[in-house]
Length: 329
Image 1: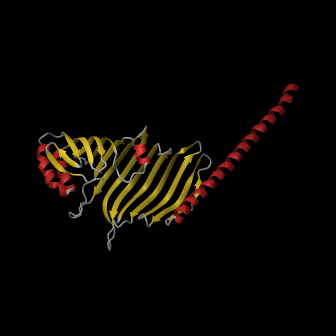
Image 2: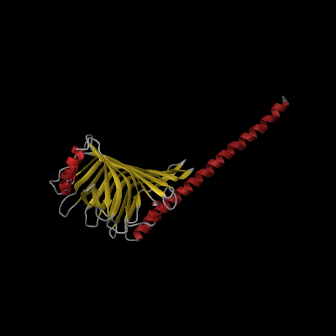
Image 3: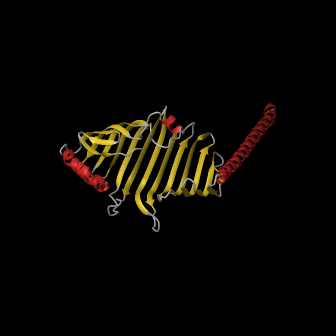
């Protein structure tokens, strides 16, 4: 009995030391978290200050580090960036991003709205809602990047006129992934509509589409911060577009020469070719003669033909028929 009574004070001391250690560890961790949070807020302000020193307007309203205890990231009510020299204006609301403390290289975030305007005289603008993104950082390029958005709108403003919608889509997403020295790209969109300009300004039927491609040696190519696609090469695994009743897809390798002209050896697959020819002619009135020229030939090949499509120095050919020319990139 006495031995049991003697053990109790020892056990109590051990529990007290354990509880004290836990409290101390929580206190140290909390202090470290808030220290890093303060440094993060200071770094955001330093980045904004450098942008302002460079002649731009930059803001992240009510910037605050949040996420305690297991995450950390910056939240801003509104974001804005305007650079007159670059001809760029950006406004957004509801920025939220964070990384897990134990996985700081993976960042996820949200942005309620974004509006981008090019001030280069073109008047082009882009807007979206409910943007969600994630990235796994690395050097010199991220290992992965994913972006999704809703209510996508591309517009153009002209002097003395309000913005005119050129295209809109219910939703869209884009993904980038490093695969060794190469880069994989994928994107898709739902219910894309665009306006025929200048042929009356009608909006075309909504289209769904997707693309999956690889850029050979893409890591080195993008790390050099290219201003064009000249020198790029890769493979289109599949790029498709269509409506419920018709559609088309292409696949095959491609290269872009030093002159910016495209060379490619592609396979074109068409579903319901007659309906697709009508859609293509309506979408691009300028190539209606070429579409009409090939429509009957394609329709004679059946409901789901697969055709060779070649591009040589930007000139697009289907067999012996020349369909048009792709300008230099």
